[in-house]
Image 1 (tube, one colour):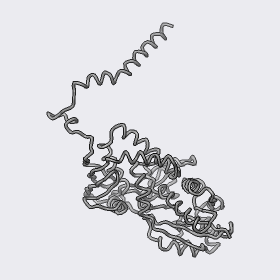
Image 2: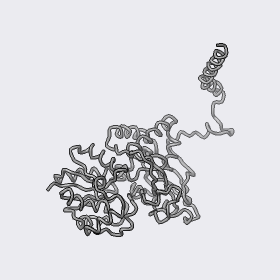
Image 3: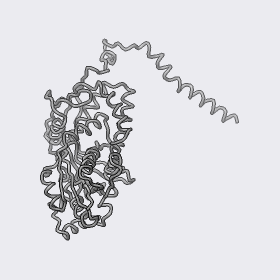
Length: 405
């Protein structure tokens, strides 16, 4: 019997996929799950997979590797997608695929399977990453093949085949989480006019119930990497976790957006990214005082394109590697500290300093300490406006020629 490695989340789709792959595709199923820093049931995922019919089950704790090797490069690039997605789920897929391919090689499996739907982006992330790392492996996507489209139909399939699904009601929503953030999809979000219900959220408190007194944080960076919180040095996963707890108490990092999916449709997504939101805010403030205008403008373009690559599933691409080379240069002097005030539902920068700051107080001042060369400004302004002056003259001639003809 041929073998398939199934990316296993413990949810209803991948649990049913174990049974479906065995009975409809006649494959031996080995599951793989990665603990990336969210969820309390990872220790039971192996048992759950075996109970559903898997011949083997693997569960790894990859939280530190995920944050350091995937989150950090994306963060330093300032990557995001659309109007607010900080790519928490999208970043986890290439790491998971890395391990799926490794396990497939170790067990001589010819197939990798995932539980993604046909209208989602995750199918592209899994399959583009597999194609980049192991183009010889075949991909199976049971959810694209079976006829069970609704949660009710899938639960009926489970009951008919005696497949145990813990807490079946929770499977009427789709949740994917890791230390960097949580993404949530649910039928209640399909009505764009209705706010997300409070019980949809996991780690962020409703801002109206947040503490009234703000909290002040001092975040230290070295070469673009967050290194310390309030003077205490921390590994990055520990620092993110601490900021998740603080930001979560204040309701920071709730993102409710309508996204353009790669398949051409718009969908509503809700994310919880409290720690990431605080870090992005602080990091941007430090870049503002260190980077030149030209570097900042190009860095913004790279951030957008970098985010698009991750969103579309092209982490394993020469273009992403090339961007990393630029990012490494752009972050060489992003060292310093940023003071952040966290208030209900938001955070704001209240101070920033860096030994590499380009901010010159005397040049910027309007007091008696002003050292700006004002006399040079008039010639600069004249040359700067030369193009506009020439264009105005040409437009005047064009209007005159039009009237005379």
